[in-house]
Amino acid sequence: MATLYKQGSRGEVVRQIQKTLRLYPDGIWGPLTTERVREFQREHGLKDDGIVGPATLAKLLPGVAKSALGLKKSRRNIKEIIVHCTATPEYRDYTVADIRQWHKLQGWSDIGYHYVVYRDGTVHEGRDVDISGAHCTGHNANSIGVVYVGGVAPDGKTPKDTRTDLQKAALLSLLLDLRKLYPQAEIHGHRDFANKACPSFDATKEYRKV
Image 1 (tube, rainbow, N blue to C red):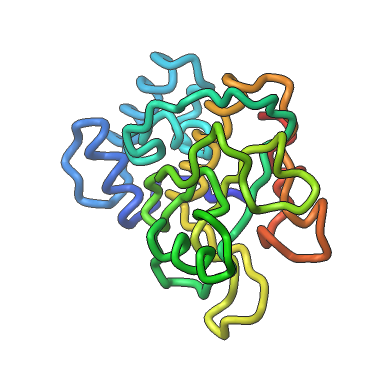
Image 2: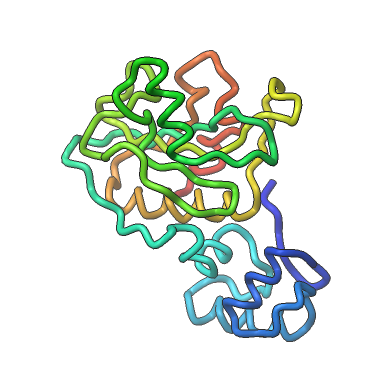
């Protein structure tokens, strides 16, 4: 279930929301934050309930979610957008360069994914979208591979949805943009096509309305 931010919420995400809304960023959600969120929601055609869920968060933090990416449309016939996790322990950060190195050690020419979502919610380009990925056997030719960093508990073995709130916002924003580029493409989790837990949550269900 997605985290909701509202009156009484506290923390870093609240602080970033306040900064975006040009409020004093104390990280404590009070009446003024609710009032400004409702104004923002009305301005952007969202339900003005003063509660920040994934849709509002994606609009509030587009710079974080997209990392200033201008998404390139692939010349391939994209039929699927497949969501993955890196299967790395919770709280550990890894980069595109790290993943590229892992994949090259497996004999691949490049990183297998097209987009990587870091724990801080920034989105980074991986393999060129014009080139088939190496992320889902039997589905690479006509798909875009998206991966978030994490997906495993601190023990390094147990599957777990470790997405930070900023990763959830970034994934939603990225997938919304990809669906605009590829309106006929279906969104799936890797586990739909392989005997794996990846991406450690039901992406098909969560993004069925995207």
